Amino acid sequence: MKHALQLRQTQRLQLNAQLTQSLRVLQLSRIELDLEIRSALDSNPFLEETGFANASVVDIDPDDLANSTASPGAPSPSPADSSFDAPSAEMIANETRWDEGGYPSYMSTDGEFSQEPDRSVWADPVRILQQRLLAELALQRLSPSEALMANALIGCLDERGYVTASHLEVRAILKDHLCPSDEELDAVLQLIQSVGLPGIGARDLRECLLLQLKRLDPLTPGLADAVVIIDSHMDLLAAHAYPALMEKIGTSKEDLAKAIALIQSLDPKPGEQISPKPTETLVPDVIAKQVEGHWTVRLTRRDSRRIRVNDSYRDYLKTPDADTRKYIKDHLRDAQGFVKSLEQREQTVLRVAEAILAIQQNFMHSGDHGLKPLTLHNLADTLDIHESTVSRAINQKYLLTPLGVYPLKHFFSVGLGGDTEDRVSARAAKARIRKVIECEPAEQPISDGALAKLLGAEGIPIARRTVAKYRDQMNIPPATQRRGIRSL
Image 1: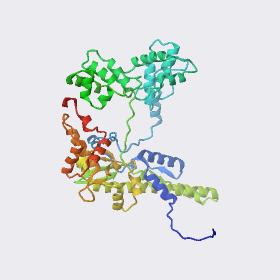
Image 2: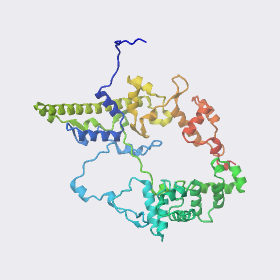
Image 3: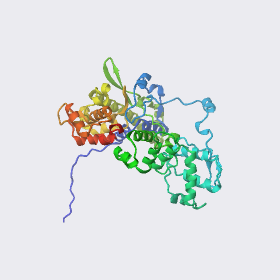
Image 4: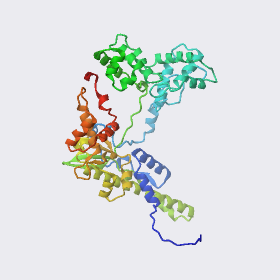
């Protein structure tokens, strides 16, 4: 094989540093962008803050937040501008820090309970639960070995309040101190289960529910049947096999209904009552408002106005020192490029949000039922930009509407019904399916096939298997499992 050198002319698109930075800034979320701005201010002497007051482009009316409801799976809306003025020295001196308060007792490795200062449990739900239990056990008369076993078992709790380690694993944790038997560990675990909320310290769901039932008054209606169901027939309960349950436990329909109602009142994750997960706060990037009968979209904040380029360093460009001139030129170029990236981000997000609102006008009045089919490709063609740019522009961006705070991705959905202009979005079909199921009689739930026929009659062409897929995605059980005990 003969080797030879050849010259070939090709065209290749290569992103420069400015374009790369603009694309990276575009896809940042609100929190990530705030961190990026803070980092740029700290590292570049040419950037300075102009004051948060000048950054706000629109003040969100408190009524908008009060009247809007949380979107599915999204926390309640929060004010648009989460910034604040720096506290004064006097405020800092007079302020009591949340992490300087006293903490519950904990137990050291020698089996003694003591205080653990200077360690915050604010962001650790599991640690809050563990310290609460250790504080309650500190009131019990425990031997040093029992205290060590209690400390090891409580250390194996998860957020739900379940013990996630076997006795063998607990012994491995305690191997440097003692080697307890299964009976000794069971005795300490029963003590933990008795001092905490009902169900805490269980090793699985079955034990968790049984512990809660055992704490109830023996005269509670349906208690005896509920204990038998949880202890031996949870599979039948999960499958809603009520006739088989009545046959197995030998009870009537009325008594079975009481037992099931009692079971449904139990908490499968009791640990979360003590250490609830912190609620995530979403700050909307854009807000939709109706002005004189027309819907408009505005940015909630103009980050490009939060910072500016300080030109006072330009005078040092005349310095004879070459290294100083290079340093100033590089940082001045970076500062100007960063501000430009912020401006381009705002323009792109605003254009994309305006285009989404123009297409999804009906959503503002009807919710998901009014959504039209929309894909990244469709919107990219409308705006004459690349699909990847649209994808970055809607990534982790949120729109505040009269119906709540929604991610921009929520407004994108494929269409059903071929290529006709009367296509219905898949999200609208899901909303209709959920609405029909919510209104169905408990005695006669509607099947997937009947749902498909019903939606077809309403102009939503959909197959039965598609209905089943959408129902599964919404975590709705099939008709056989939705049938209530009263239908028997």
